[in-house]
Image (cartoon, one colour):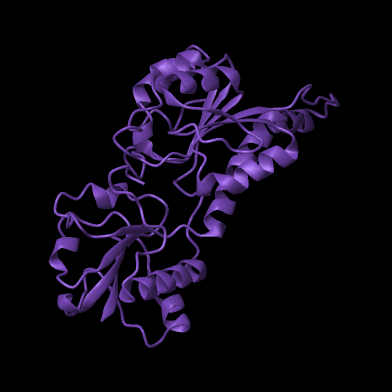
Length: 307
């Protein structure tokens, strides 16, 4: 019996080495060079080709190589009763927190201004006169280290989740009305949502019109959350005043896309949080052992909810 890694266009050599080091007795195969398909009991995927999972007759569970499972659930051939899990370790969430905090602090303290002043030899002290107000779209496991960091810094933190679940230290909002309320109350609107039918295109004209002039949108969820045309038009109205984007509808982002040269857009190439090989290998092996013992994979998702 074996584990199959299915992640087109992703370098898996480091992950395979980490798996071999941690469990040399566990067979690991990498798509498209799978051996006997009837031996694969557990698959770990990132954007698997449609139909591949359905060719594995002994498959007991599948896990995403990260927090998002949308590319797996969007496969119409996915067996209806196949458990779906997620491999989202602590380092992934910590890296996400660091990436968001880096942008929030850089913008809030206007660090770019000091670079300009330094180049001009100009001494002009300045600092924010109040705490930053940050709204988080998504308050699950990926957001927890970020929530802790923001509250420790003293920010006014708002959160938006599906049920309006209370979270200590946050002002929590729910529903369409709550999202608009939060967007209008914060300096930074941060999207960390999973991609589902309910969250597709959620960052649209209605949300942008609610944001205050000069505020910042940060999207580290999925590119499909953002209506790009609406954002480009909203930036011209200064609502929001800038956007920090790590994810896009098409990746890599096409070289002729207007985001590249837009003066109010910061781009990073989907690297706000990247799985680390050693941690991921440990999570894969732990999840595999759960599955072959007849238990659900780690981070089992609710397929109806999409996360």
